[in-house]
Image (cartoon, rainbow, N blue to C red; front, top):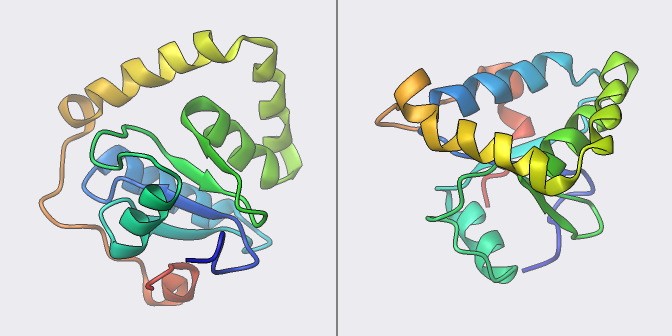
Length: 139
């Protein structure tokens, strides 16, 4: 599998998580450049990608960002890089990097552990609007 099948950054997310699905929709609406592509961790592409980077996707409670160069980011670092990459006011997210990654990930992991309890879980993966369909990786 190539490092990245698109020339765009790809965001992997938990397709059953209501918080994650809401966050993906939030990014889709604000990514004015249309640079980000998306796939669920449960998809065939998501599973292959995680295996190719020696990651256990079933145990991963994180958003994952795959850069065009093939570099993989997870947890708070992925979330911050995504926000920064959207430009504009969202670049201010880089301020949060003053906190050590371990501390950022502690908060991130606490939210991730409780996301189903707080926001619910969908039995099926969320389907994007037709105008967003081309932003999702299907291979």
